[in-house]
Image 1 (cartoon, rainbow, N blue to C red):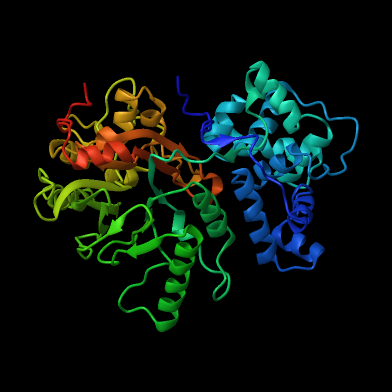
Image 2: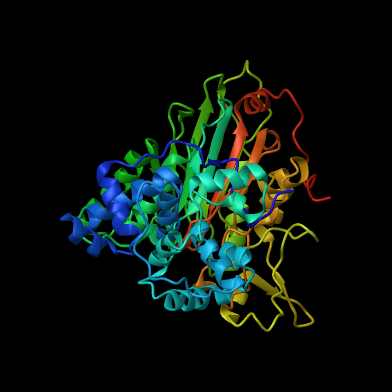
Length: 508
């Protein structure tokens, strides 16, 4: 049975090659001692940006997002020695030992809390207390010292414990990507907070951007929707310098991913969107993008096996602070859904599929037991403005989540791939795992929620093979959504070899 707090074990393999270059080894030696980018760069005689770049490539090789998990990965691989540590070992209690291991293996606060067996709000104070107790420089240095004290295992110890099937120990050590199945088409959506942040200097991208795209690049996407392209898109009144900076960042994203990119206009929305397409997987066009109230990025695609059938794809970011506009945007999206017709190969080009991915900014329709809802009447909801954004006041004065957009999508025959994975593929974690509301900035807003979702037509939904949520750690306040399709099954759907899944069929 899938568990929401577990990493995607089938996605990452501890036995994959992960040898570091000589330069990466020197960077790793600084990393495990808790060096910052500036300190590590000074020690090695390189710039802090170069140090960060090498650090990102180390993370890429191990599938590790945060500095502590990267330190644990390289130390577990025995490629660098642990830093000097004082003896005897501090008298850590059982909770502290679990917290150290969780910090070494996970980058998401909620997952660290779950693994350590403590409340999420206690994670940061708990880490700070353990760092102080260990006399460590910071949490990354703490992980390095834990290896020196033999509190964390090497790859060989990890593999042994994995083979023996022993509990938590079976999850230690670095994890690396496996080769994708030949039949797989991978799609996804990431709302990367503020596009990774402002550039520290002209034509220099921030470390958070590099860390996020290093991870994205190894995941093998064929289509990827992006939200909050804050610094990759500009308004019509932008200066020439701002336009050049945006174009530089967007070009860098395309080069990093090896994909062609499309950006939606800024429009009335505060969060521009974009999407990336792998041209070896899809044909693109012929129709230009369409723009609506808060413009999604809309691109028409096709598969070479069914050249006359078109797939209308969109990356969107629904209005955050205006639920009335958000509902209107949901209705405008039905114009895309309405173009999905019954396709016959002998006819001309016709839209045969519709895939919408994005930050819908409100919850899905809740069903007891597997779709977590938010209790907006709880005293823990202290952000009353946020409650007005996401909930509707009832005649009796209580509050209930707004689910207008999801209801519109279901009524029009589109389906949430996470629901399909949970109900038809036996993957309940796809539906139960939140994608947002995990960051400290979300305190008082109701807790974890699943607002980053997909809406897929009744034929394509039956080609879904897996849905995952990948933690982004401190890189973003939203996690990464991944939806995998079977290419063979998609082709059958485009050729109408089976009947579409009826509206509301997954809600029982």
